Image 1 (cartoon, rainbow over the protein chains, first blue to last red):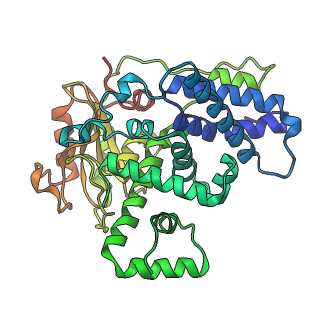
Image 2: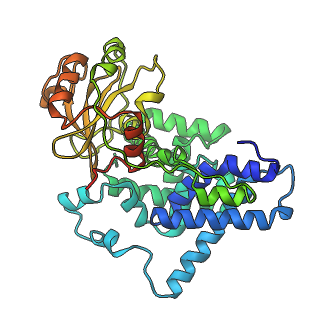
Length: 164
Length: 226
């Protein structure tokens, strides 16, 4: 669907990936849609700040990631826990056989990760960014990104029962 | 050298370079325990990317489109659930019977709940629409249907095995496995694609899903309609 505006056209091409990233960060799909919508709006408003010749995807991913962090912090200030009760109901149980199976769902497992680990896991393992690119999006050193990623993966492997 | 957990993960992700990559590679080559860790990292990655892959194929939401098309009153047709039309089962049978039965080495299976589809197969069952797959694909979905207990089920054929899997809260539960899988002992041996098709027909409450119904089902994450 060609658009006369090349910036909007490039955004449209990125949209499926942006929705996937939003889905990876968010607790549910409606939250992901909201995050995606807010990101598109902000990108359109700030389009003059994007430097031609630099990667549009990293620029917008960084924007989405920052908006998500802002939202998470605002929610924490309002006193809500990040993990919905329904998701958290099994968390912290004794890890018996049945509980392990109950948690054998990717969404639930991701929901238990601290935000910094979750974003590292999603950027590298779902979005396919290199450690360096992911570190730039998050705004941290590569080594920090690497260790957050390892902690996140270890937690996921333990929860999803794929640990060797 | 003993690689750190960070190095093992980075190695599994192909993120190490030069001398460091060579050192970790050597260490991994000598240690079955490290090999298992690398395999677990890769299996996790495959599972995560398969989990989110269907999002890429969803229709663009009308709200998002309007932002990008401010003057254009584009209306996106949001697929509505339609009554399942009567269909003959035979329309899927021909390509199914022609499917390849060559053997390949299976990926190391991850420890999912027993009896559930592994990440690669699960990813295909999540995403692949019958109407959109390549005629020559070695791994393919033969047809989709709703079982008598309401679950969405899909019959598939791959070089390793053919079978039927039904979706529930934990993933794709393998209900039946055909020839060519050495793990098939616990399941009813179905023998051939033709038998799989027969079993599908026996399990189904109605006709096979047509392309539109299949799309709607995929959109719902293959969750059984209430």
